[in-house]
Amino acid sequence: MTDLIIVGAGAAGLMAAGAACERGLSVTLFEHNPKGPGQKLLITGKGRCNLTNDCDPREFMNYVRRNPRFLFSCLHAFPPSAAMAWFESAGVPLKTERGRRVFPQSDRAADVLAALRQYAAPAQFCREDVTDLLLEDGRCAGVVAGGKAHRARAVVVATGGVSYPVTGSDGSGYRLARQAGHAIVPPQPSLCSLVSPDPACRKLMGLSLRNVTLTLLRDGKPLFTELGEALFTHFGLSGPLVLSASSYIDDITAHRYVCEFDLKPALDEKTLYDRLTRDFAALGGRSAQGALEKLLPHSMRPVAVEKWGVDPATRAAQITRQQKLDLVRLCKHWAVPVTALGDLEHAVITAGGVDVRQVDPRTMASKLCPGLYFAGEVLDVDARTGGYNLQIAWSTARSAAAAIADART
Image (cartoon, rainbow, N blue to C red; front, side, top):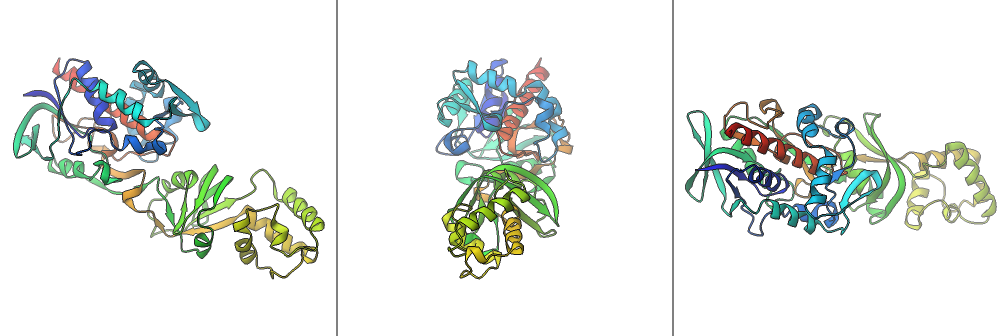
């Protein structure tokens, strides 16, 4: 008999294990990935690990897409400031970048993982696949792994979602939760690329847009607007702005979604019109496409002329006032229709998961099965990019560990 079994040694599992050991609990940590714990952490933030966001809990809630109120208690118990202090004390100096994103000074996700593994070192690690919960008399009494029963006073399921299954996130936690009677909100990709039928995307493949504003429209109404970077791909759109926008898409088959780019957000329409007038006067002998050299990236110009609807042979000096107005509108409202989310396997996180209405938000304990707890991405809680999702992992894990330790005493 051990005090606590944790299923999944990712961000939430390692933090929960360390916090429980710190409180004097005996902990067994199961991880089935042969490469070892924390593999998804190593690829977060392009290998740099954006581990939290330097904001207060109330503001944090504004960036949580699903069930923000569920996080109220655990975020106040272990807010971003506490996470930053913990990593600093664990030997990971931090820095804060644009958007208050917090990274290790080394820009190495491996340093974050090393600190967590050291924290969880007192736990016993088992590299076995947990196939079932051990359910006795309506409570969780352990797990079944390797064909054997492993008993514990409490079990935390911290298996993550189903994105990047190569790192170990294979959705097994949903199966375990269902065994205890929990409902699962169907998982879908979030913080993912977006698929577009617009042939212009393939023509612009590889083009990165910087300092543009993206507005996500649903049935013509704006859902999300932000300044940043985006990338055209052979299938549609990607990049930081697109990943954030994707988390606002619920049922993509029931609504019409459009990503609309303002390519010149620093200029209002009149100022942009005046600039075009000057450019076309100075380049009067150039073709319509050539006259865009100061306005748009090289690979974008032929596509822009096609969308603009002007005869490419038209000289800049011949362009009419209405055509300039049309070009202004194109630059300020470059529309890319979206028909599908990117594939789930390569989404940064999974939306959906264990229905939080069946979980105590103060303790992460199951309301249906005593002895069972949840932490991290396996829950139906997700947020935008910027370190918010890892903070959710830290906060839910610490709440679960604290509750289990308090229950023992």
